[in-house]
Amino acid sequence: MFKPPISRMGGKSKLRKTIIDMLPEHVCYVELFFGAGWVFFGKEISKVEVINDIDAELINLFKMIKYHAPEIERMLEYDFSGRDIFNEYKNESVENLTEINRAVRFLYLTSQSFASKGVSYGYGTNTKPNHHIFCTDVLKDLKERLRNTYVENLSFEKVIDKYDREYTCFFADPPYVETAGYGNKFGEKEHLLLRDELSSIKGKFILTINDHPKVREWYKDFNFKEVEVNYSVSREEKARGKYKELIISNY
Image (tube, rainbow, N blue to C red; front, side, top):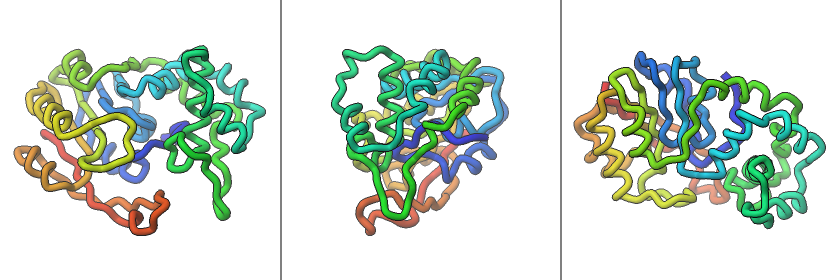
């Protein structure tokens, strides 16, 4: 169990042990919305593993870690947390970069920004800069973990269609219902499509999402586990505190 190279909004750092303990027996493990990969990097290795995300830059990062981790480490070795460096990376056009340069840019912006959104430089008076990505050999373990993993950049329904078997376990951590801050549009239409897809699979699924009346109605035929998570990353104090979430499964 180790720390992912980045953080993402809605990441499962606080819930991953609970989720891992609930995973059913399986041969093939599939994450439909990979994000930072807290559960993937914390669980025991399955015989077959698949990680997927619609964010092309995120998936490119993990592809490059899988195939070119030493070069990414070399390029970051003498970097440090600085506003000017952050803005230089932010203003670069990805169309002019190699896949490795894109991965370095994405890793830097995500790790050195407020709330890991890659938008504004993150700083503080009582917290140190995030130095995780500048440490030697940080990516080595990630590379080994990804060695035998299929990395996909597809819509969730296509991944379900390709990998669904009786022995498959899908972990779904979609954008939360009626919650701002996610880069990709994921509204009620997409949530209902996800519900319909998961309702008809041969395998098993476990889904984490905010506790919302619509969610309870959509998944009323499945099993619910209620949990509380403490969120502290917000500029507004009123947005911090404990929030109820649901872990939903078909087993």
